[in-house]
Image 1: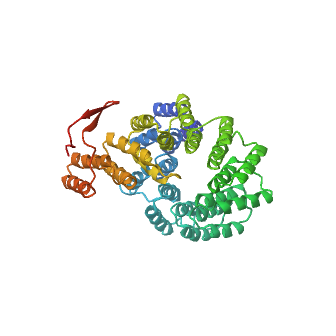
Image 2: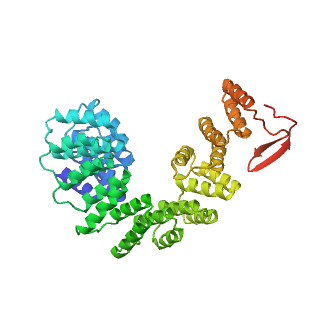
Image 3: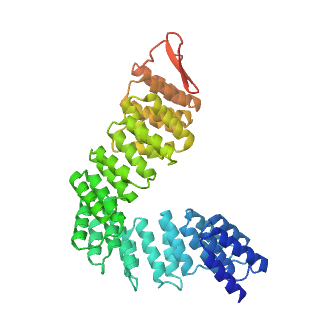
Length: 477
């Protein structure tokens, strides 16, 4: 009786770290910590505030039953580290020799969906079919979500068709699964056959179409939704359609959607504001983008970055840099997209030194994220020029990333096939890493192409200063 009352007190405290700790302390004092169902209640309560405490409590529990595992796995499946579920599952199956129940299976299916682990999901599905819980619709709903997120909507459809009760959540998940995986026509057919379509179903289909580049279809569907009188009481669907108009560079449509946002009272919404900034920037109306930005009540890193990139794309380097300074001043942490936009602005304005400083800042503040910058530069809507690649090459050279240096050097050589400095840097990178065969190949290539460094001068970099010096009539290479 005391155990049940204590467990109820723990559940009531869930969500507040201080309250959970207080209840836990009282339980320890009363000597009830290991009495069922208290351990499971504590694990669940701690999970709603801090997972490390949750795992520590789990490790200290002498008798771990299926209810305790179920509570922990449910917590991990919703946490920022879903991969932690895998060692917990192995421990349950081997060390404690417990068979997963339907709650455990549903939680692990959610984990495999978040990890995009089709292999784990299929293994789980096979176990589920052979288990006593094979008719459980809650597990089936988790499997539908897993197959959709792993890119196999047809398998999700098979599970969906086997369900006894198909609620609107399951219909929406399957529609979204087909749309998000580039199967727009099938998603639309399924959507048309869905009973009681609500805003979430419309949003899922529209979002999936925009995600896969079918923005025209998404906009047409939005118009149909409005004609059907579906009430828009959530800003998300509007932000998605505005994003679609940005992808199409459809300025008139974008302005109409801006008017809709105004009428619906969503202008202060951050996600709508961010979408409008992006739309106006891509439609070459940077002044309207600024007006929208000024009207956003609360700005996140996306708000700042979208505006920075917009200014950069329109050749307004000073404005982009001023925005960056304001962004840092208010405590917003720039990301890789912010830096790439700034580097682009600097390279086109001839601000080479400022570009180098920004990359140095990126290296110091976001050490190890140069790979993300490289990836973003290869996927930007505008082609990076020589100065932009050169700035990245300088940064990765300082960071001593040899493989990345070689990749960037290749990019530069495509743009400047007879630039001696790139060949020399490439040779030096190979030499530092002991790849002398490659050093010889680079030198041979330079000779074959008759590429020589201008004799007599070189430079060294000492801290933040560059020194030019005379070294003789030819390069020491």
